[in-house]
Image (cartoon, rainbow, N blue to C red; front, side, top):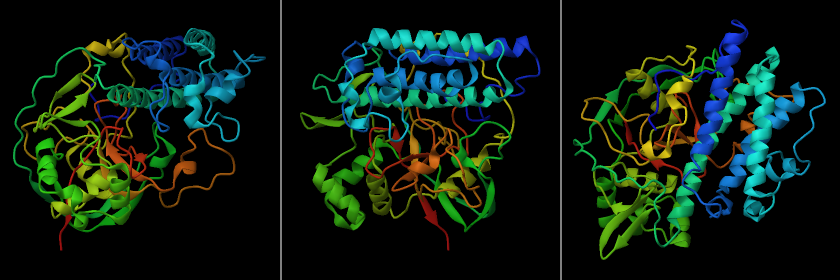
Length: 443
């Protein structure tokens, strides 16, 4: 699943301009994205889709229903006269509304409704949305867009939740029964210096973005150096072999407590078998490839490795500045999704494990393989407008005890990455596709 990062995906720009033509394009885009969610479940059993492997993850059945709930509540219930919800209990079971939803850690208890009924729910809502699109009110366009963008976010979560579920199985079952080719040998890591200065940060707001990317503003950056690529398994293994997990010099106090309590000794999916390191992937268990980017590390591990390396993690502003220094900033340009490109794309065709850096010189790998931890706490940008009513995005509710990640991963849907996109997770998170890029200050 390759990431397109040169333009911000914008599904419905100028939605009312072309009448029926645009309505057909909307319908195709809606069907394509909704179908891709179903495609991700093709190799799963009914049992696979009902289980929650940890409180942070969700059952796949829940994902199927939750993404559907959004369209029912915020599109159909609002814009279809006298619309009757598919089932009165589904809001409590599958919503994320505060106060009326089932606690996250209890989602695996939803043995009823059945998977069959959840699929019927999706079909019912999809049919109603398709009928509405034929005469979609102007004010519904942005809501429909938000629902599809959120569904794409959930598609990545589905893959990471599936991987965690299958990765806890002692038989290491493969989600995709297709072997991975060995990664190409990587060149020696280089630290490239950037002058810094005044930098434009954030999304201009001319096309779709999430609210945490707004407003565009200016920051001052001191000169800094940033790695030309991500850290590899081989480089991280050197940290392990040097006793990095047992050396208090490299660890934040909170990280050292987490490491000891969880007995962490390696990245999440590394397995030592007969004294040889292996890595569990969605393609099955494979010998550890030293040239692939290290993946599934926590903020604590990323920070410890950076200290061990005599470096640090970049701030999210340094990361965005570096990414924009090599990629034209096209986030303000409208683009139209190509539904034919992704229609019925089989999961078997996907490569869902990091491949490694290209042989190109200069900065690279910003939007491939893994998300990259930054040193920045997740908070609002300066001059963000105060809200008087809840937002569909609800980003402000999550701005506590989390760090920003930038870029994209092998699980990120095509077109869903951009230089301004702000992913965020708690410091101990490892089940997402998370990796490391180093930075240094220049004095």
